Image 1 (cartoon, rainbow, N blue to C red):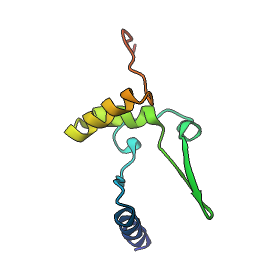
Image 2 (image 1 turned 135 degrees about the vertical axis):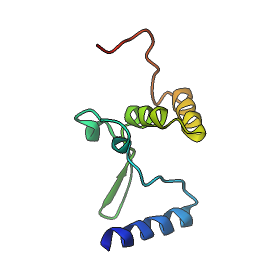
Image 3 (image 1 turned 45 degrees about the vertical axis):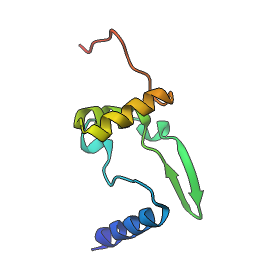
Image 4 (image 1 turned 180 degrees about the vertical axis):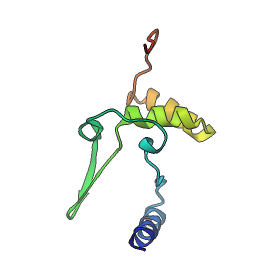
Length: 93
């Protein structure tokens, strides 16, 4: 029940700020690399709560994996802003 109450509070907070926040993690879609917490940029601290972005590279890869129209646009914007870099000519073995 607490998780539902917390989710409801988050939804109300997002509505009050007119913010688009997804209650999903990149780890829900892709395996994330160890240490992602250390690579998650700080946003703001309000009282005792600190807010961070999830690691940008993991966000971009998860969005590519999902492939929704908005996800593709989000990744293009992340590339444009220099938050992530496209790898060229690399392969995984």
